[in-house]
Length: 584
Image (cartoon, rainbow, N blue to C red; front, side, top):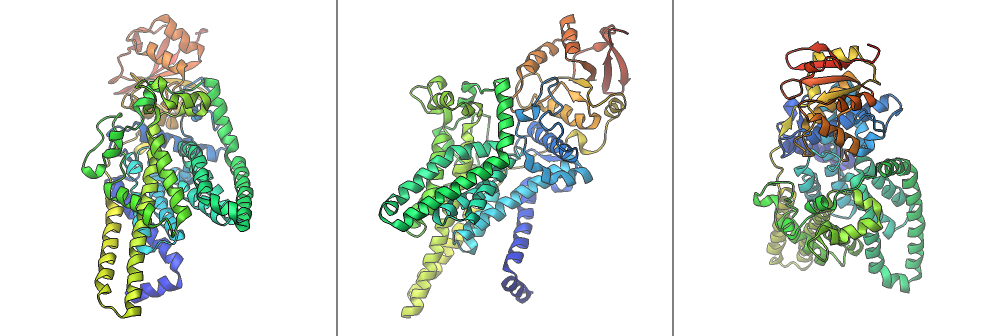
């Protein structure tokens, strides 16, 4: 059997590697999300949070993308939430990349499509991480260890419910193209860089925006690294000019591919004047204590203002070592990754860097005034995604250098015939392999909670009834509404959104990254146990036709407003009411 494997590997190395990486990625995804696999068609992974708000929001976005793919993107930005607001998909991450899971959604279920996308993202992180390191001349074991470590990326796995932040493969492809474009400018590297950035944007605009902020630092690092050669050598000068040409072409390709989507989102955000509260941004910024704690120490997140961002003590030490021992051999690569790590590390502090403790006096607040898109960022600590990625790559490169040193020692031993070097060779090999294992699994994934979305098994009677009595343009209010802005309070909102996929009406309810002010004001009125006439007038003004009430959760009794609404459906839990028209 081993002989057959060796024969296949040497004859078809790429095919065998692809199959093995796919199986390893599937195994890792199963381990990370366990006990999801037995409930693949019904449940969603919620990470280390018992709340289902974020995974249900993302599964609703995946459903909307799949539905619009089938209908030709007629109303892509105008998703059926927050009626009568427009452009509501732009309030959150649109995640067009989730369309690859559309066939699974159509053939099986929304949860199955969502989970297939999660498994795909983890496998791609592993495979592209392996490819990145192999393309940087790393040997087999450090490349596998680095790929596994990227698949187990601490922040990505800890927040696995935020599937838009899970894919790291686009960033890796971009970095590979960036390095290639700097070392040997060509059309191939231009396309790799463009593909990487486009893939990153389609998966997560948040990551792409952070990458845009980091790119000038990466370019500056490369220029400073090559300044002597550019000044002295004609060949370096020519390469520098070619890099500018191919880099400009990459910018054009990226702009053509994703420019219209980003421009549309920017327009919608400007019209709603979306901005983040700087005090909230400060809470979601990293601190020094965030970078001295790690999940490897057995510490788990306790609240939203506490972050454990250290990617592991061994990885961090090896990453620092890698900068020194690999600088001569892989200078451009090391400079690029060191610039990525240091710049993202500093930016993760966000509104916590300033000339006083006040967020208003922070460098971040000043930068938001100068660069307005930055004011829409809520969580600067997420720059740590790039820091952790860079540290993992540097650690894998350091291990590769240790193993390379061991091999050179072995070759030197054979050349000289000195048996004493055998101990050094075996020792360095054992150390390298041991460190590779530690780097791969230093931080294990936390326990994964599961959440059961409404669409997991069947369509309830009230949703089926509402679908038969309505048109897709009809607007419906679902009670209860979220009590406040907390994530746990909005779990009911995301459930109503998923029910909307069944009855096909337009919801007044909704949850997203940005909540429009008109809905916040209306939500306050709906919290009252008894509604004044002004509440009904406002609901009529926005053309609300139906009201769905879950009696065991809502305090509102609509039976006392028979002159305003009439009951058209009732079962053990739900009631459906229809607004009485003025003519009636």
